[in-house]
Picture 1 (cartoon, rainbow, N blue to C red):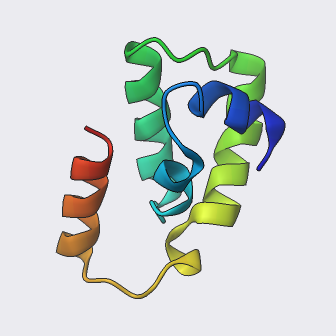
Picture 2 (picture 1 turned 120 degrees about the vertical axis):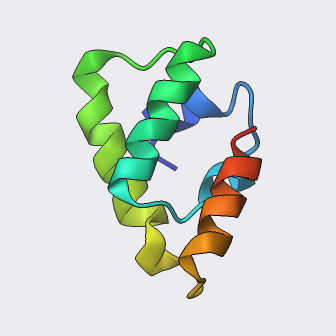
Length: 80
């Protein structure tokens, strides 16, 4: 996992919390904002690279096909 993503996220979450999400770029962006609001440190200089990495490696195309509603429920509950 990219070191900066790992450093920012795994102090509170295990890696499966990230790798099982399969979110769109917009959803990852919203998750980064939410986590920043909860205290995660995501430097502005790293945000775009982190977002690119998350979307490329853990975007919807990397997961099993799921109905949109199931994905929305999963991402909502997984982020709680």
